[in-house]
Image (cartoon, rainbow, N blue to C red):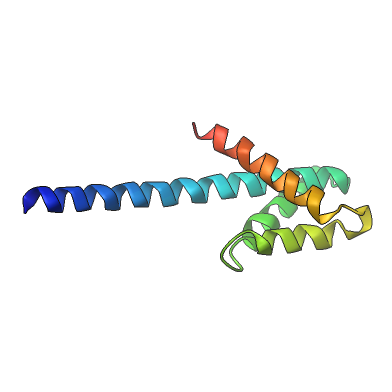
Length: 102
């Protein structure tokens, strides 16, 4: 029975580690998104820092990426960025964020 408990604890630790890693990747991706949008909107360094924080915080509104997508979509409405282009950029920056933790 001990080996079963050890195995269970091992799976639980792996799950917790994977969840923590996913959280870090999402936060890093959101930072990159904030930087990208800030550049498009010609923000100064203080505005950029504040905007990046607002993107990171937007991710806590609901599970998944839809909350971040809506925020950025709204913020870029004057720039006519398509949903497809925005999703591609989110995917691209997510992959970049993943490499930061490898």
